[in-house]
Image (cartoon, rainbow, N blue to C red; front, side, top):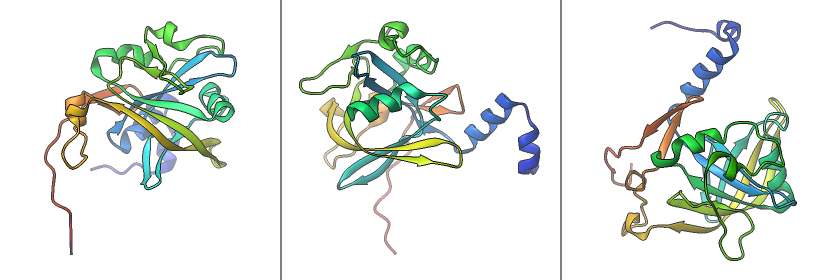
Length: 203
């Protein structure tokens, strides 16, 4: 096994270094965040940094890249307080991946990539119709991370749209059955496969 110190890693070519570091944290859930601008332009972005922050209250967070790299999503959330999170499945993966491209703010990204916006009653932000696990969020707080100019966006869960057949008797959601996929690195995707469930651990 070879050691790579941070000075060596910093010396690598930009995309090689980004791939290497992005893969270190392992497989991650990947979803599309749906927002809409005050000018009513729908927007989509691919996010693989979504984390559960708590169940009561139900809070979920994600890391938004620096404003210069990804301004539309965070600006829409900041201005409207509303956004959706939509699991990605294999049958629309190419379209979802295309959402990582930098489109101009006036471009409707649903139309640009070939996905279908879905508006539910009394919910401002659009869902992705092709997604089978999708949920509505309301902004709680945006925490700037000064060290690398990113933002930790914290939202409160408002509602969930999901097929009841994949919800177990104990509330466990079978995301393998839903077809939700995982990401690895910048452009790698994988299928999720359950190994087992273990009993609640006690000393």
